[in-house]
Image (tube, rainbow, N blue to C red; front, side, top):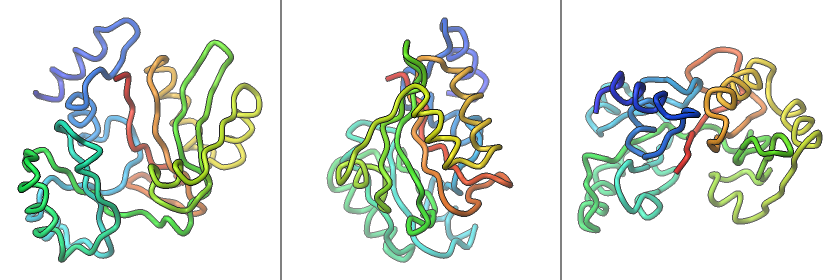
Length: 198
């Protein structure tokens, strides 16, 4: 799938919506959803970018939850790829992301627009999102949700979220917000991990 083909398909729906993980990744990798951590599609690309720190693996293929692995050293990437290959994953669908500073996390979770207004499922536990939500999950909606976002997101990051909610009014937005600027765009403290209607 090519970017323009996917974009046209997504916006031909009424309202626009991301219905397949492959659609999400095609748009995400081109930066369509705004601020994100540095990503790569191969170990060779990571070496070329000279990443420092730790990385996480995700997959745009089937069985995505089992493909996940968080915050491991870059030198272990070949070993982690081989593990997933032996488990039967299509390793061409693996993607890698540079780990943001989890020790500086403020809030993370999922945002969606409902009939009652904004709804946020979130956690403040300083771990990768799935683990954070599993440890301590909270909810906020309506005015409480708006206040929560305003208190924790830098103004330009909050504008980014509202823009995505306007573009995809029925989809879920996964996000993490930090005490410091993060990602590939300036003046933002919030990473967009996923936008999904599936």
